[in-house]
Image (cartoon, rainbow, N blue to C red; front, side):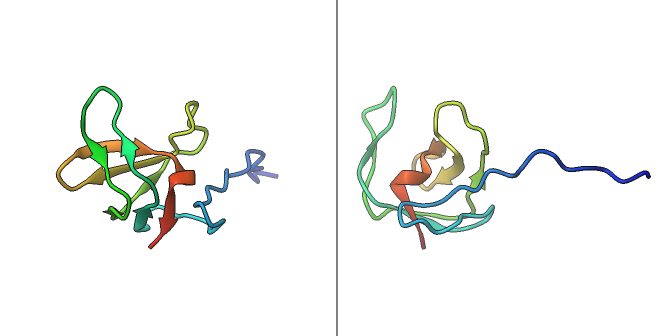
Length: 83
């Protein structure tokens, strides 16, 4: 009685190598990514610090982050590896 049941399972977000990612992790981009609506590109090898996971992202962009020189953006976990 008075016990909260957790029915929703936390979605596990993994990088391209299958490593489980967590909020605050640093990741490295593994392929050049064009930025929608811009001529900029996030280059392969770009390090991204302090990611924030976005479970249940409808468009597959399940990582929220800030990239130096580019700013706030979302990435797909399949294009990064844990640094």
